[in-house]
Image (cartoon, rainbow, N blue to C red; front, top):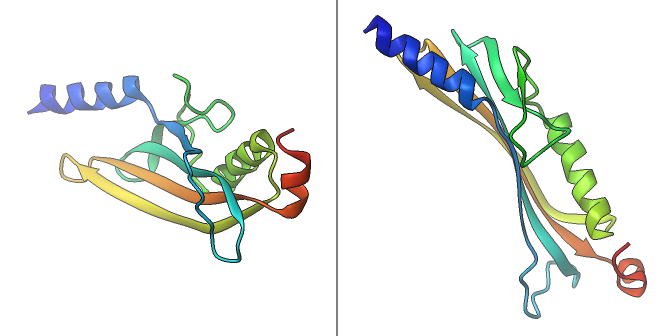
Length: 138
């Protein structure tokens, strides 16, 4: 049992936390509430592995999402970091407005609460306003 616990802990540390951004821009004449045209739908997830539910082992790197990069012994899972990533995605798409912005936390426990994973999920529809539509993407 002890070796299985150590193997799981080592695996969690080596796999690290994760900061990922998924984006889709596939729309065919879809409109959002208010008559806005969507530019993209964005899903952001940042996760951390915790020892005894409070000691961070590894978490996602908000400065380098979608890369094999994590912060060791640091917890970066919070709404502020997800919003920073959302703002970067808005700049990339050249939009200044969002619709249907939601955030939630998810917790998972493993090995009788010795190891835990916490994730913050944020999703939004990036919308084109009249100003964005005239200028296009930056």
